[in-house]
Length: 225
Image (cartoon, rainbow, N blue to C red; front, side):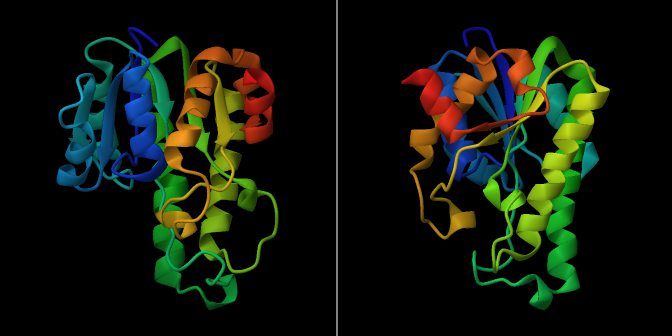
């Protein structure tokens, strides 16, 4: 990934933080963001090749500034629209008990935030650039107690399909399976173990296999074993 300009949202912890570190290890320059500057600086600080920016994906003006920074006066090669939230414990947040406030905030971050991330990246996206949106099977399979989070991930995947139909650059879903983050209650694979999957999706997979598609753990393991 030498010479690659990448932008990663939701980079203060979990998958986002691991992807930032892995991309930098592979030679990319990564502009990364979170709502709290101190938290994302803790990830980027001391890492040669990472730039921390405070940005809230719910605010398109923040995202516009993020992408301007990430372009470094040129183009963005890879965007990982990773920022997401979940209100309530996974598996214990039934949709019929969700508050309107929790539903609205989840959609605003996980769906509108993905829309804003992609939309504001486009003026800076290289002709051969690509956009990756992390998701999971919860977006496609009914799972009790996943509440608005599951709905939001289905919405994010719909955005991927829509943008795939409307823009030239490939937009795809990366499904790394169950990963130990705050959204999973700390259960699952170590985020560092799945970060290489995002390198593979960003660099190695044919663009046509990314565009509008779901790249899952099985496909990654099959391609790299």
